[in-house]
Length: 576
Image 1 (cartoon, helix red, strand yellow):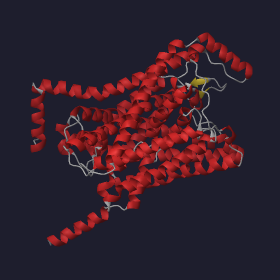
Image 2: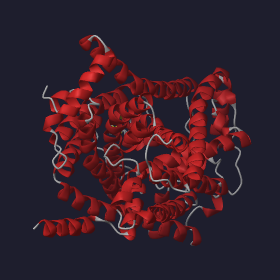
Image 3: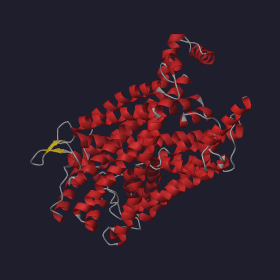
Image 4: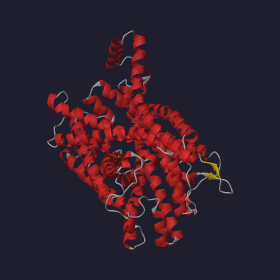
């Protein structure tokens, strides 16, 4: 009987193992998100409109991602859990690094993902439906549009937090459907872009191979990143930061080694999967770069090719597909998040762990769902209110303004909210990748001291040193530029700005003259908030652990006594 049972278990385990091809598909799926549509133009701008430099940035960034994936094969071999980069830092680094990583992921990254992703999906949906209805974007047209769309985003969060997490079969079905839809615009944009270019309907004649003058002028509030060749050098590392955002989520697939039939082929699955993703991204980036620079700007060229009606309908359908693809990202996040929360509760790493740890269930993580909703929803509401009412609008999002019958603005709150998403998204991926690079740095140290048992890979050190160097350089440059830009505003000249605006109007009487005071105030506010956001993120990464220490030190009279009680409680399963 026992032998039969063992044979059955072996068969079940064998069935559960995934093939090389399936592993490669998991990598491709995990690294293909919506970031390409939101960051492609910024990478071209960082490259000073040089297509050659932009292509180099994509290849360089992709090499960094591949190096990180290969380095993570050894890192993930140490332990198996749902904690991802937090678990890696717990294994390979000290308590302070682990706490910062845990606090950032739990109290910022995850709530922000639930804040940003639904809004990105709704933004694409509004543009898609609007295009089909022959509008720039679908807006309801009230003063309270931002509240309506925020309410819809909350419903999206609640639905995906409950259904995929508690009913994994439903989550798996949704994932397959959304994955299929997500790949439609990827391939369609590539085909359309190159057909437009070769049929002379696109903007290939406006494509630049060399660096273009960015007209750096401190008197006009220019960024240091626009300063001739130096700015282009900075732009490479700014682009790497943007590419990190595009590939965000790929690192979840780095742990597939234990699930493969042939674990020794994990590096090849990661390598080929990421190479295929990189080729797709590179083709999309080139396709959009030779047709206006972004997907939104391709709309006019589609109309030139197929006619106004057909062009906007195709553009609308593709945007709706992009929105569905973003919902797929939320679906995958929601399947992981409650289990991640429950793993942290089981380790005693989140508030109220001692009350909840006996109610945890990995198969049906109800506690994880409830905990994550209580954690995320208040922050989503807070960010939405602040963004819509306290931030400033951006002309790039004017299509989301609610207008009166005479075309004057009734409300630009939704414009402000969407502009605010750019601010809060700036630092998130970069900090996540810094945390991963720090875990890999811990793995490098482990090679010298062997304090953690891991499966050593011959390619680890080369990959690890490369990605740690690239990531830290990108972090340093991306961090110092906002501070330099803020300092450069000292040289802003209002009178000179006014003169330049009048000269532009004299050359083109359709040009809308910008008010120098409004322009400067928005520039100042944006740069201050960019710096302040980084500082807030760092403080939130530190403060919860400080508060925890103060609270339990007061309760137990000593931090060491609390740690001893915690260890005893976890080991002996004491009910508190």
